[in-house]
Length: 289
Image (cartoon, rainbow, N blue to C red):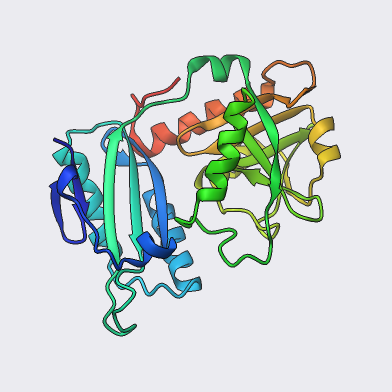
């Protein structure tokens, strides 16, 4: 029986329950972090917690818990489920909608499963993406945060899967390239690495940050600037990032073939560098494609 951490203790997964008046359940008032665990260690844990607490503060959620408490809860779940390499999710909601702001306590849930990587063929041959028919609203207060109000992303991802694609790319109403449903996006144009700026707005992805570090270490120019459909379709390479997929090469945008339709050297270079960062942080022996 899988164990999860709910609020203040470990419980059996089937016994975990939240009150019917929980704000996350009723209104999607919550935040989450999906984390990669390798060799019993959460990759970039400090950055995940930084993002969580930053979003909670900006959205007025009042996350009155200690970082060490959350880190310990994650460790308890990994040990209880005997997980060395895992996908771990930390969810925090606003708690009871009836509680006064001064006494409201967040609902905290930590769950983990064995790490299931993307198919090896994706990394060897690349993936197809579609253009999302919806638009990323820069004025939406939740844009740029890892909110549990995720239904629009899941609807777009379902459309991608129905079209035989692995992801859908979002644009803003003014035509700026933003991000994938569950990923950040990078282009290689004229030998330079490009990605949309956080002000687009896009999620400040943890893997996005790692790729920026890898590019710097390899003396590769990385520019954050507004990108359009023309930039996307003329790119020499396209790849996506998140901490589970790491660096995922894209070889087709709907019916358009990216360059020669093969995985490019920069994507391979960034993936190798990303894996070195995992090794450096977590130790060698992590699960890969």
